[in-house]
View 1 (spheres, rainbow, N blue to C red):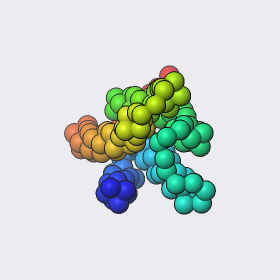
View 2: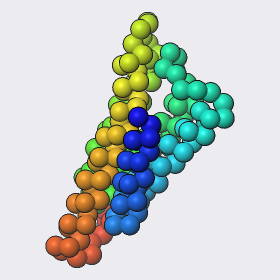
View 3: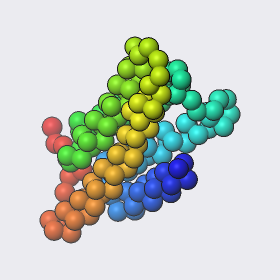
View 4: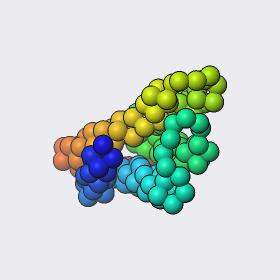
Length: 146
């Protein structure tokens, strides 16, 4: 399963870097960095587990939330809001796990791992929309004008 996600990540990030605008590149960089840091952490220190809340995962997800929210609030596009909302689900998963009593490992896994797949889908859709818009109207601002 991790191999499929890695291939998906590489393909979507390459598409965003090659054809996307600045917001697409920022989000792609954020997603790639989070996966690289997560993999380095698991290879170096601790295998992935969903029995307890891992503070390193909380830190990675919180950093992603800040980065994605920054893009979502400033980009001249709608799709970053979707990616940011998926990250809010991941953060909610950590909070829910802190308060649960027992035996919800699958729920915790789903709330913290599935948002990446959604974010990659939103990034791919958003990059495709940018390419399509660029073809139809030409160059336009990537960021909102204050």
